Image 1 (cartoon, helix red, strand yellow):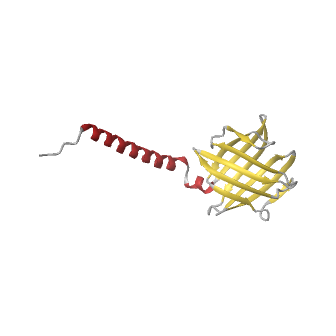
Image 2 (cartoon, one colour):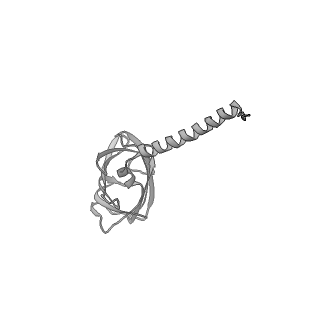
Image 3 (cartoon, rainbow, N blue to C red):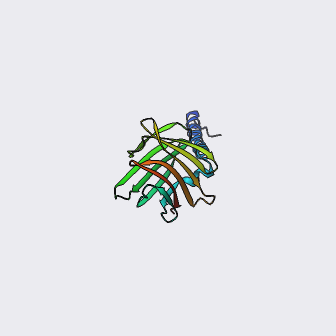
Length: 171
């Protein structure tokens, strides 16, 4: 005599199995489509290396740390700076690489940022305040993923600045 498994048990079991498989497949798809290997090079913490940086106009900060995290198809950035004057600031934004403006918090110089990828490991940012472009920046990650270089032209705290900042990836 064969043991009968209640139909309801089979239905619930299959439903749970399908839900688990779908959740796993969705997670893998989301991870692989959210960013390329080149995009992942940006993720993590970067510290300003003042000895490798060149400040043509405007004062160099005492120190700066940038942290980038994946956020959907874009990035969440947190930039902590101690300026030459000793004043500290934390600027944050979440933005996609679609040239649309996204809000910036913690900055008196910019209230929006627009990001655009322009080449492999290279992105361009336009920072605006009250609809007026205040600065442009070009970010390049080295092929080995250990150095981040940002060429920035614009205003910081009312001073005209023009610099190339070099950052080292932190472990």
